[in-house]
Image: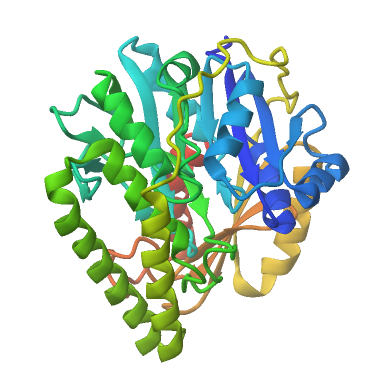
Length: 411
């Protein structure tokens, strides 16, 4: 039975390899019906033209460094009842949309946010968070196995992460979409605050998971060291103007400056930045803040009806398979799994060595989910450092750990 129509919107700029990987994983989504809308620079457009995993996507050319404007452009072309956003340097689990969209069965839920795993494929970058009146996030504990619907008290909001969030299209249109004054940073935080102000509920969905790579960009390097803080400063100025009374802005800005300085110094101590970088970056932060005081705020109404009709992608229903092998057989197992992916399956290969190494999970460029680690090592980082077990028992445990997000049955 078909669910709500969903438009998956991906904004991509100067990261063609990351976009290619993202599209490969999006093609494995087990949800019906959904369409894919890519808003991309010329490099990204070329990727969509050459891809053979998603032939029916919508691609809109956009070559401006403004993620909010790009998302709004995607929104105007999206025809789904729900619009879901994922970054180009992220890959979704196959059951991502299945879990993320489910709370929309409740009419009071306007936004949905999932959990974000980091580069090792195990640890979480972001889980459940709320926002105070100054946009500061705070972690909250919720049921890890089911969605939790939250209605924030006055002045607060529920945080959704830009790389894993969804909204009712009509609700997002009604509040004006994303504000292009936020060219980078705080764009989704601003949306969260405005949705809360409008009285909407947000569902936080732990099983709606994506893996986020933090790929390099004009704003940060691959090691997450910042290249420029101008837009962060400008975004904070815009956020203050929209959401904070004047009498608290100076104190708040001092806190932002102190926090950014500490972050930069930590990178310097780790050897990722030089002392001269600290001075340059802090100067750029202050310059951005000054410019943000004058930046025009959005007042443009977005069209209620999509530019193009809904265009569902036809990826078909895929069987999800799980294979566990010892280390020496890993390469052959992955190659065999890649052939099955090409024939329409979802493949997970667990490769275990006779060690206590930590486990890593990644999405192979050939479309295979690969997990590597020691037979006696930890996957979840709060598990014991060493635990005696057998290949059969460990395989069963790891299969159960990912079953709900990967679409594996209970057998």
